[in-house]
Structure formats: C-alpha cells, structure tokens
Image (cartoon, rainbow, N blue to C red):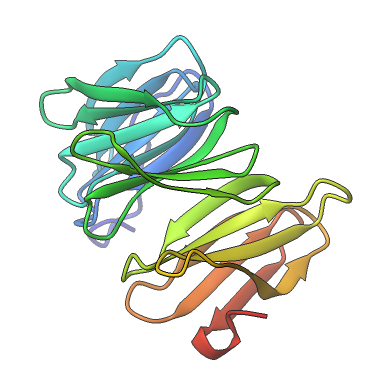
Amino acid sequence: PINGQSPGLLAEHKQRIAAIAFSDDSQTFAAVSGTTTIRLHRAEPTDDVFAFAKSDNAMRTVATSSDNKLVAASGSDRVLRVWDGETRTLLGQVKAANSPVNEVAFSPDEMEILSASQKGEIRIWAAEDGRLKEEYSLDAEVSAAAFQSSGQRIAAAVIERDPKNGIVKVINRKSGKIETLSGSFSTPARCVAFHGGLDVLAAGSQRADLLVLKHENLIK
C-alpha cells in the first residue's frame, strides 16, 4: 500500500515493463516501458509524470539517484546514458561494455555509476563526467549487481556458462580481489542486494531459491 491505500494502475503501458527503480524518498520511480521508453512516475495511483527518453535499441535496466535528479539506463546497444531527471535533458552517454548491459546502479554517494554486462564486464564510471574509474572481469554473464552501503564492495549475480548455475561474487574495491560467496544455485542467479546499513546480502535464482548471508559468512 502507498499512504495506507492499495496501489492502483499508475499508467497504462502498451508494452512490457523491463525495469523499475525507486528514488530514496519513495516519491517517484522510473520505469523502462517496452524496452525503448523511460517514464518517470510519482508513487501515487494514476499519477504519471512524464515519458522523457526514447532509444532505438532495447533498454534493459534503469537507475535513479536518491534525489531523482539523475536517471541512468542502458541495454542491448551497450551505451550508458544519463539524463537530468528534472529537465529531461540527456547529459551524456558512453559505450559501457562490449556486450549488452544487464544492470546499472548509482553508488551510495551518487558519485559513481556501475554497469554490468552479459560478458561479465563490471565498470565504474564517474557520474559527473563519464570517466571510467575501475574495471573488473568476471568471465561470465552478470545478471545483476549492487553496491554495499559503504561503496567499498560490489556484489554480482553471475550465470556460469556450463552448466548454467548461479553464483554470487563479491568485489573488494580496495584490494581488487574478487571472491565467491559460500552458497550457489542450480539455476541462474538473477538478483542481488545488500542491506542498507548492515553487511547482509541477499540473492535470488531463476528457480525461486533465496540466499541470505551475514558478514561473517559472506565469503567462501
């Protein structure tokens, strides 16, 4: 429920919704509609704010800054685009990977944007100017990725090539070390998230398996 009421149909989308991201204040969210259009909504029934971005290629993922001033998206064209969420102006774009991008995310301080691709490329970009700051290779498709609240670690849901099992890897940005979680899935891993203030990580698989680990059990 929103404000104690059951949610309604926020807006009629003619095609499937590929991705959704809420602002930190929960008042607005961005949705990729039909994989080619981004709409920004208010979190109140039937209140559609605006459709503000279109692409000729399929967009798979979208993220917003906590104040909703920046919106980032990417997809099959491998290009990371960033818009001003208020003016709807395209601020910049950069080729983010050599394969389709499955995930984009803002760092907790919103100074960086993460992109993760089908070929396991995880790249960290400066939100201000699009400069490439860090790059990691996981050698398998990354279906989802998330920053730890401190920004010092990144968790990635990884689909192994043969067989297509799911694992979660954690990148230590300070040391550059990439380690594997102490649990795995028999089907592809599809989502991953850190708890905001604690070293707790959750991951989910295509077969509806859920893995939750605390700090002392995070790394195998």
